[in-house]
Image (cartoon, rainbow over all chains, first blue to last red; front, side, top):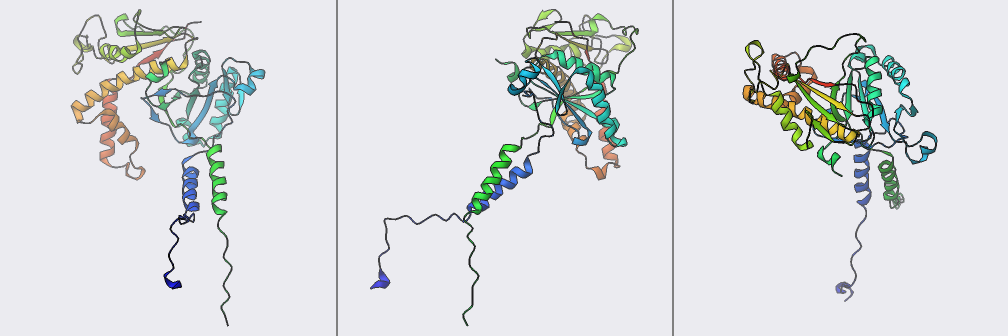
Length: 161
Length: 207
C-alpha cells in the first residue's frame, strides 16, 4: 500500500534557486564589461545637452576633458554658485587652461599629439561666458580640435521648458 | 570498503556574493558619453589684421541674446525654423559668372548668398545665454549643412553623406591601402568641399 501513497496535493513544490547565481553572474559580467570607470571625480554639476549631429569621439588617449558647470552642493560654500571650470580633478581658473592643455599634450606619445582633441563637457544649464573664455585660451594654446560632448537625442528637448 | 564521498559545498550563498558585486558595479560606474558635435577653432590671429572682406549678402547673422532668444538677420525666429532658413541661405546660389553655383537648388535671389563656398554663417551669442540654447542652435546649423550634403551626395553617388562618412571612418584598419578606400575618401572630400562648413563665431557681446 505504501507504494501507492497519494502525493500531497496542497503544497507547491519548492522552486529551485540553483540557477539564480548564474543569472546574477550574467548581469554582473554585463555591467562589468559595459561600464567604464569615471576618470575624474566631478565636483560640479554636469548634465550634458542633447544633440543629433554627433560624431563618435576619438579614442580615449587622444582626449583631454574640460568640465564646466555649477559646483555641486557640497562645494558651493567654497566655490560659490556661479559656473566654474574643472580641469582634471580640481576646480581651476581660466588662466590655467593653457598650462593644463600643454602639459597633457606633452604627456601623450609624440605621434598622436597632432590628433589631440579637447572634449568640452559643459552642463546644459550653465552660461556661455566661461565656455567662450575657455575657447579663447584653447585657441592660444593651439588646441583647435574641440568637441561639444553631448548625448545623442532630440535637441529640441534642451530648449523645452 | 564504502567509497567516501566528499561533502557537498553549500552554494546557497553564492547568489548573495554575486549580488553584492553586482550592486557595487551598478553604483560605482557610469556609462560615459562618447559622442559630441565636432568643431574646429580658428587659429589665433595677430591683433592688427584687418578682417577679410565679405559681402554683407554672404553673411547669415544668427544671434542669441541673454534671454535665450534667437534672432536671425535682425528678426526674431523660432528655433524650429532655423535649419530651414539656413538651408535656404546656403543653397541660394545667387552668384553670376565665376561665382555661379551649378548644383544649388535655391531661389537664386541676388540679395542672398552667391554660392555655398562664399556663404558664411555668423553665430554671435551673449555671454549670459545658456549653453543648452547654444548647443541647440549650433546643432541646427550643422544639420543644415548635413541636409545639403546628403542631398548632393544622393544625387551623385546614390548614398547619403552621413552614410558615406561613417563607412569611411569605420573602414577596417588593415584594408586602408585599397583603391576603394581612397575613392571613398575622395568622394567624401568632394561633397564636403561643395558645402564647406563656414561657421564663424565672433567674440560674444558683453552681457
